[in-house]
Length: 129
Image 1 (spheres, rainbow, N blue to C red):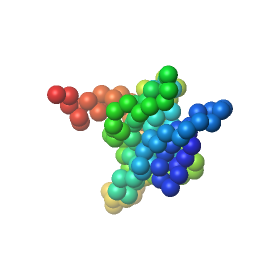
Image 2: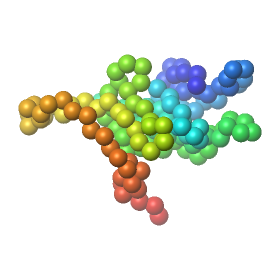
Image 3: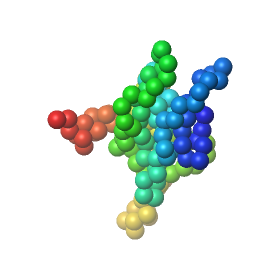
């Protein structure tokens, strides 16, 4: 992964560099899926960032398959080199989200929320035809 370059994400062969392949026109913090079939990155949305997924093919050569798909994981705030990650089995994301700023939430302690079965949630939010 070579980038971001001015908010664009490129992929290039390693260890022997070859042509760069543009994956996004706006994004940051690229991350490969454990199986190498998807590339994730963050795209600006409102006051935070949203995870976007791109299906890729690496053999016989690199190519993007289909259009980028925003996932229902948004509001991420960026601290450090990357504010999100994916589990080794590829079934869950861990993200950094801001604590709610409403008055009702001021008494709540800082906490970590883990979203399980996010793919099932995606299916309910974006029903198939």
